[in-house]
Image (cartoon, rainbow, N blue to C red):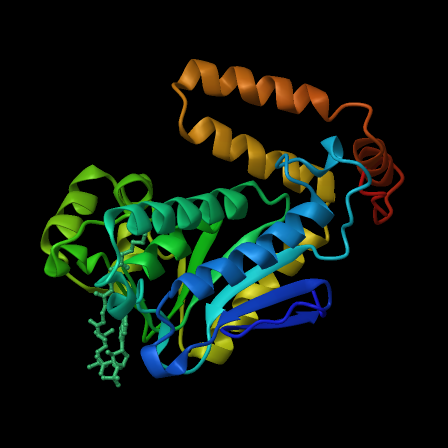
Length: 278
Ligand code: HXC
């Protein structure tokens, strides 16, 4: 990670947690194709290290040195104010299709990364910014955050997962209203709708809360956390019976793994587990 040369992202690793900040303050962290390309570089490198299957256990020797990722925007005002409109305006259909494909694939990489990814939304999360946040495992917001899918104001529609994921977060009626009106909502309303999980008073409290949440996962079995993330994602798109079948299988697959043997032994022996991560 330290070797990556990045123009529009800032990376910081502390205590096994990686913070990725989109950094284009002059345009409220709008997503140029370069930002997408750099996010792809970072997540592709993480996939190479921790695993691509959504389950570290299935990959060769997953490296668990990074146990969680925080995605945020640098500065006080914005998480990500959407795709870069001045770039989009000159794109051809083919370029737009390629841009959306790259961006959508990035969201799939975030969703299948075996460690949790938390969006820390510290300001505007509009259009592609809201969509990027929704690809994370959950969204924490500061009081000054705002969310919206304003694409219809540009003669566009969401193209980075908004038509798909927003309804998963807020239900179909609220998703329709937000997408069809382009209305912007504040952090409290986002929380009431289920888009933001918690609202923190300011940016510092927001990052603290994101770290605390990721540290809680990092104290658990990494392979169990990975399997749980994968199973929740798989079940999301399935009818109940099929989801239960996938869950049952994934549950059974935990048995006999070194982490499961350690976790259950530690409980019985009344000591803290020391998970091998396998
Ligand atoms: C390019 C942007 C930008 C964007 C802001 N800026 N958002 N540039 N693309 N998405 C630039 C402004 O042009 C301005 O540059 C500077 O950032 C500060 O913004 P202001 O508008 O002056 O700030 P303010 O008045 O506070 O308004 C903030 C705002 C507004 C409400 C966030 O900037 C806004 O509406 N931005 C566009 C939001 C949007 O529509 N996003 C969705 C894009 S479509 P200058 O040079 O004037 O200082 C999308 C599709 C995704 O995301 C599909 C992907 C496949």
